[in-house]
Image (tube, rainbow over the protein chains, first blue to last red):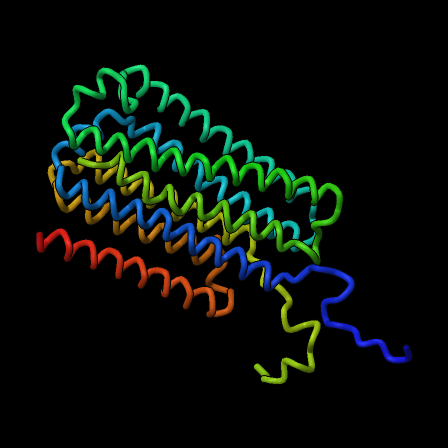
Length: 207
Length: 105
């Protein structure tokens, strides 16, 4: 063969634009997943406004506020880590990602104590005290545990994603020129933050 | 800006790099909005229904700030913004359909 036709992408499978678009497509489906849950919340809250208010008083506003600040801060550090790697500073990028993972752990620990307190008070669906609540309050706690639980699952997945990315940065396979995977993990992390931004006022700040 | 992107095959997609300062500024504004929404909710409890609307409004402003600056939508190709609008429109359709359903029972 004299002339070999070379595809634009042959030899490597890295395609930043396609990768980013794929990530965004996934994030759009995530938005609709949580969007559906928010609609369920809206309907049940409008049907049981007083019960939702009563039930929300069981939540600790300050723990929720601290968790909001923790997530917002971690969103900033992951965004900065992208800036760092684009400027060629892998070490700083790794440090910022480590802070992000640490913030994720802090978030989950606070969540653990919050859930623990609820379960101690018998508010987990099926427990004795839960059974004595009004229908509307039960709906609130079903939604609270399901939505914050699903969100917590996303925090765990995002954490694992970022740890994988950190390993790749250490190995050098994510670097100044090839960093779409880091950007994707950042996008995912921001989505986790974005959803919390709505969960926080809807569950903690009912007054 | 010139239109002959095809001739500059390696330089046309030089990434836009957001500065550390800009990320920090975004963070500051998000924190301020968070304290604002907590403050209104905890200390302005007598405003009642108004607080739900303000809380959702502030949350939406925060979400926009996150999407626009942290998620880089501001500097990305329009495609992502358009698709976000499509998703939002789809969400509104669900919402309106369900609301009509409940209101006409």
